[in-house]
Image 1 (cartoon, rainbow, N blue to C red):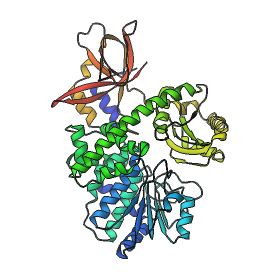
Image 2: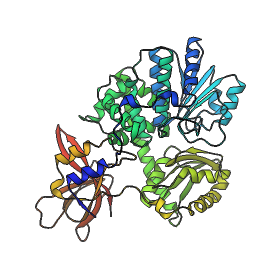
Image 3: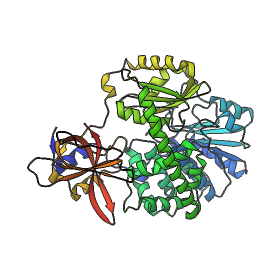
Length: 525
């Protein structure tokens, strides 16, 4: 593997971005989204005629963020908006017949869901409710018979950039509503929440997504929104990165819908004072701790069930917590380097989540075997599904048969190390160079580097439960200078030959106003 200097690293990272960076003013016109103008007119008329409007969201970060942006926007009109975020355990996903039983409105708007709500659309028709679906998930051939469907992934939709999340679709639609009603609302004020949604929903950080996240993280640093103030206080950094959101904030917000009810997260985002926002954030923290415990236990149980000879891992168990199966699937992908589907069984019905790797579209593989399912939805890298317990074995066989036709190269993880950095290149100047290419995430991964046969000088365990390792190494035998590597959630013991080969990334560590370089181990070989 090649040894890189800073200039070569700069050139390699620059080559990821062929086009010039977009400005906010270059975001394509929302009117290019199919049915968006029609929807904006219908919403404006509903407001003018004082009709009842109900919003139906989703329980993940994207769904909660979409709902929060809508709530804040309607507050500023001001106009009353009823919000329902389905409960994962009682209602299931999206705008469903059970959710519609609670709705008394002339207009229903969905955010981050609805593209597969065939049954719900029928019920709305019967009840004379206009249904506007806003979603970003991949549509099936059969579309709901709704008043309007706004989804960039519709084949007939002319919006030029398709990889946007549910909150972006909602935000773009509201920009048209603002225009219709001649409102003086600055759409930039919502970018703090929007950036969190884009990062948490693992959208590719290229094109307009890159611009929105970059500007959104700046808005987050200065926004008077109580939830943003709490996030700033909690992270306590002079600069918030996309990874801070991905690892520290998104899991907390997600934990409400996973374990209890997403309304807790919505109340955090829409709190009108910092006191209320703080209380909700504390509650999210407790739920997140519980989520971690549940996830660790379930992952242990799932690993035992894995058939390592199959291309696609499919594991199922009675009573696994439905709220953590998605994270457990991601853990299995990390461990076995294969797509994974984890199912929780209750009363003869299995519900679960799928996560993928490399170039494998888990959505397409599931779709090929939909005759064995009761429901499914999602996109290339992640999906949700439901089926009867008696069909699990048949589904496992069928999806593996479908996967056997794929090229083995499709299964290769995309996270290759860029090269080897010599010890002398690892300094604050390197941090500045890396910061120029932020935000990092999907389609722009943080660069990782390789250490080969480095000498392990010492290992210390850290953290209250001593579950993290601090490893001091010497890259080359004759060097005096040592480097410190951190391995989170990993107890590493001194190897017999006192050597380590690993992949690591370089991050900024801020402590007591002191900035230092921190090397985080991604993988030990």
